[in-house]
Length: 116
Image 1 (cartoon, helix red, strand yellow):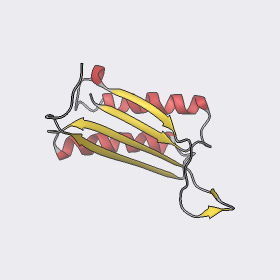
Image 2 (cartoon, one colour):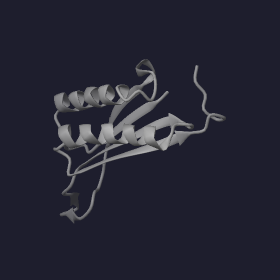
Image 3 (tube, helix red, strand yellow):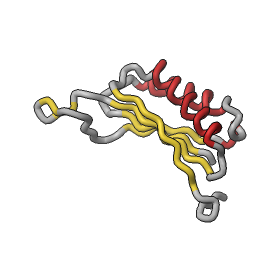
Image 4 (spheres, one colour):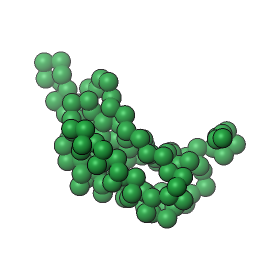
């Protein structure tokens, strides 16, 4: 805990760019001071199929990168904002290959989260 999950359009970004993006995101989130850096789990998923916006000949003309940050509930709005800003800055600098970039934070209920 916490988890940062990057989802990316299948047609964009060579493997080296994806690896760099993942590392930069992991480092930026780890440096925010909201959690212990050793606890962060960051991973990237390439969407098997996606459609974004208006289609051209049945194919999406746009691409995306989206980051979900899952945290145990209890963080302040300022802490969440710092994480969102850090992630968004990485996307805006290093995911320019995507026509849409977004970040979302989700709280996980302490009562129902399990880890071993």
